[in-house]
Length: 283
Ligand SMILES: [Zn+2]
Image 1 (tube, rainbow, N blue to C red):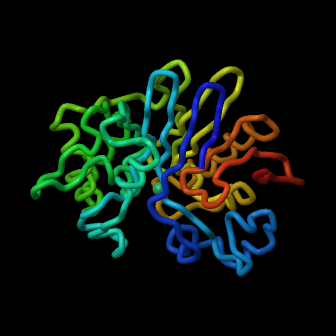
Image 2: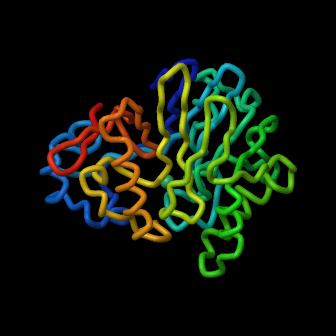
């Protein structure tokens, strides 16, 4: 799946898709609450009101950069809270290569935040050692984000994630710490969308008068467009997350900005439009 924004091409590479089983993430999104949001079907929910979600990377190609935005779960990782995210043996690297993006061709890796499903393929296991998957890339990581998670003591799972997917990148000298409003190149700028994590960013793409926004996890599912007040249990600061969604939806509604969702299944992208008192995604 690909989108064109002026001179920039965005390609989606899927690692994992699921239907249902998301109550651990969005407890308010019960089938009874989801079914009335009819525009979610068929892309984002099934006919029983179960949410469809996806874990994927975006490859963002500008005229002179080839950027991976978020790196999914990775293979062979241990100590994850969700059992089937451990010891994975998926074809992501073969898929990304088959799509025309072998790891050596990537010059930039960008993590919207440092959660488990956004940093996994930063590294891969070679002879018992975690090595950078993208050996020629600069890995851009949020300074606020890194400073936060390295000092959190009550999350053993986050310690595991940093140890196998972040620290090896820093030790290899490939990491560059960036600010939440960093300009990456002419076409790509970060914008802070805080709440899900303390240094969370979304990615603004701008080229030839066209614009897109890669969400990251300031919303996980389009049902939060209808219900900005629905928070995920993974949010560091739920109130700030709600504020961020309201602010972003107000700013984006009725504009031609293409919203590209980091965990949106199916069509994955659309435009935000007013819908009665609220909003919906027009795919
Ligand atoms: Zn995520």
